[in-house]
Image (tube, rainbow, N blue to C red; front, side, top):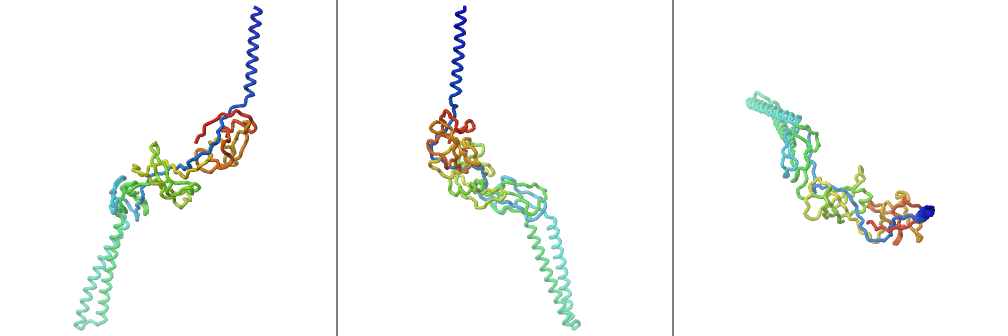
Length: 357
């Protein structure tokens, strides 16, 4: 029994010694880190934005005068022709003014009739020698004045009638009613939008791009687009880049035209990727591998002895998923993908990682 006990104890002690030795060896072994070997390649420099579908022509139809909407003749989705009536706005002030002008015209005509009778009477007396030439001239002048007043009053009535016609709101172009923010009976102000009309001869995609990136865009550049929430991609092309910068947003308007027969409803949002250019021999690394990206960007690379070294780099200011390195790295360099897990001067065991482009 004693020999057996000693043998068992020997085996236990031996196992512990082996385990400790293995732990020491493993603890001294350099830690494994994922590295990316730099291999320059041609990449696509693109800009992703969210646009919105809108008609080629968009018109806000407003009331030229304040008043109450007494009749709505069209609703959203209706197709209208140029000149079609859209709504009737009742303006009490203009109607009252028209009534005043009509009353003035009647008074002027009555005064003209009286002046005509007076002139005829004075003329008869003058021919019989009972009135002077001066009285006849005065009567004639009164008649002329009364007739001029009739003409002026009639012009006032016609002007009032023309002003009243402005309260029949008409479509300025052929198109589709996209938006009607008013209801029947609503009181509107002068210049308030009553209808939004879109042309029916095509649509475009309109997006806003930050001015710092819009400088790289130009008409003719190709793009890929997809309706938000849809995986179906269709081609598009930049047609115009506005030279004007919106002071409130700091962006510039970019127009794109969808290629091919696409069913695009006005108002629908679209995810657009504009291909700015192809960059041959470009170096791309994950942004997580870049330290101090905003102040002094740098990466950790491994030297020939697998020692971690810090290296400053220059990163292109472009809103891409991965960082485009303009200087500081070259083909064959090994970049540490998780720099927070190591420190300069540390020896590591590199584990190759596939490039993520």
